[in-house]
Length: 161
Image 1 (cartoon, rainbow, N blue to C red):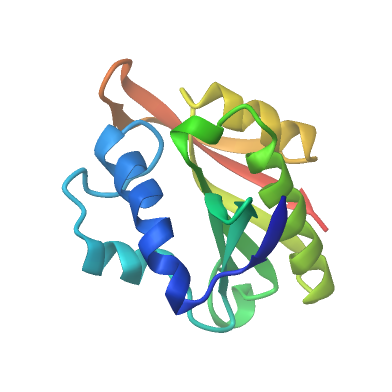
Image 2: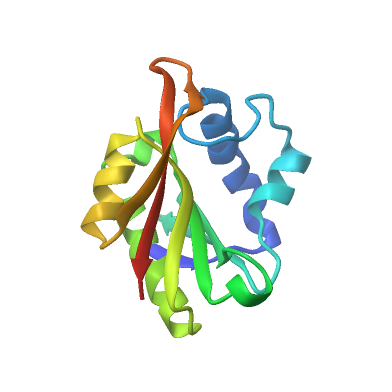
C-alpha cells in the first residue's frame, strides 16, 4: 500500500469515501447530506495542511487530512482526521494512514497531535489511536448524536510527538 499526498485528480476517488462516511453519520460531525463541493472544502486541505490517500493496486482505500490544530500560538500542535472505505476496513489502512500522519507531523516540527472529536462509539478508532500512543484527555458527554447508539461522548485524544 502506498501512502501519498493527494492531488486534485484524486478527489473523484476520495469523494465516495467521504460521502459514505458522512451519510452513515456514525463517526464524523459532518452533515449527512454533504454535497461534493462542501465535502471537498472540508477534506482537501490547503497548505500548511495536506490530504493523504492510501492507494493499493491503483485504488484509493482511505484518506486522511492533517495540519495545524489551531492558528498562531496553537499551531505547534497538529490534528488529523481519517476515513477508510467500508470494503477496506480491518486491513490496516487506518493504521498505515495514522503512522504516516504521525511521521509527517514529526518531520514538520509539530510538538504534539490532538484529535478534537473522536466519537466514543467508534471503538475501533479509539483502540487504534491508543495503540499509536494517544490518550483520552477529556470527553464531552452526549456531544454526538449517533444514529444507532443515541447520544454518546466525543473524546479529545492527545499525543506528544
